[in-house]
Length: 347
Image (cartoon, rainbow, N blue to C red):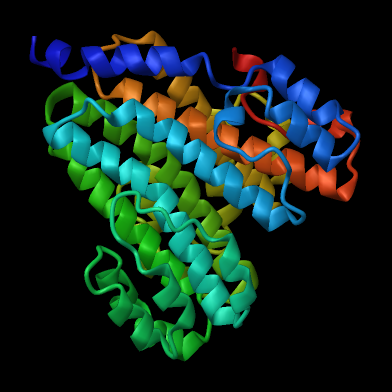
């Protein structure tokens, strides 16, 4: 009865909002447009017409930021009736968009491209993040100080020595990601019972694959020794992540570990031939998330699963739209664009 009372109304709202998710025919209409403006016009015929302006921005970053704002507003509508511990979890999911903005702002700050700050979303989602102060900060210490009243202060403060030594903002992002998943896993575990079990299981799959992506980047682009990867791994995954944290992984078996994960999660062996591609691994993250979401929607509805499912599907839809408009800018043909999307055939 507690679970029924806790999630019944939220489940009803989410079931209604699911009808607003883009269908295959919507994707086909958007991708078949002959220009960015045409694709934008088709998108405005969907539920996105409530949140996006009549004319598309003139640059891709502008388009992506508006799409991000529209998707988070849609997700936020699903949370309005949650209270207590479930609301804590929901707010952490909502803050994923907030963290995206912060990481983008950090890249702007590190690269000195302050003119890109116009693309940031400044609406307060969960915390009052002083994005302008971050972009205008004179040092990484000043960045941390600007965030002292937010949950992002401590992970950035911890990353300062490594940032100064490595001169790469990627290490700050790693610390932010580790902190985010730590807080999310704790909030889910606080729910107790099946809510905690189901929620942690969904999150663990994403943590596994996020860890694999981090490993690839650290080894291939930052020349980090495989023996040191445990220092960067995100806790909370399955035995795959545990093998990284415990130091069992070596440079020789890194691909083997990735292969086992992909083989376990996917019925298509051809995917194993693409392990060298970071974008392929990112695709697997999305694939597993979509599968988890669709399973959650057909399960017993009065659990936290309904919130996770809508969150995962909304995040996937946002990435699909980013792919579509990036392809439109580059002039990629429709058939190729449709093959780059995820979850389109699951309706």
